[in-house]
Image 1 (cartoon, one colour):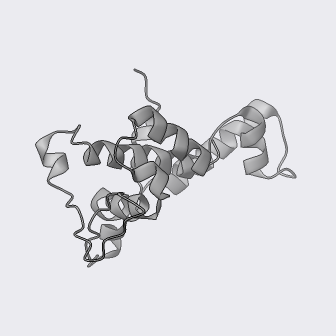
Image 2 (cartoon, one colour):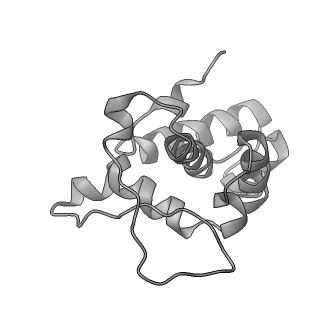
Length: 143
């Protein structure tokens, strides 16, 4: 399966790569700088890279939850042990490590857990398939 370069680019590079995507969209569409970048991207049917990365990160975290990834990846995360039992939701959350540096906030172990915990419980419930999760997340990020 082909994956664009920006699907695997680092959080540290996203701003620069987003500028490149915006510039490429302007060149392809022939639009001037009078029109906002997100409008051009929408006309072309492209996702802004930040939203695309959030979606990919949420799907990655879903695969971590299902234990679909190898041991080193699974060991980077731990499930949070909630003292309060909520009978309305059986959603699983991840423990969010305390960041000691600004770089830690951009790491997958911190930002992935934070993103996953902020998702609606319908995307995190047990029994939701990967495709259903992608559908829920797609509507969440309006792809």
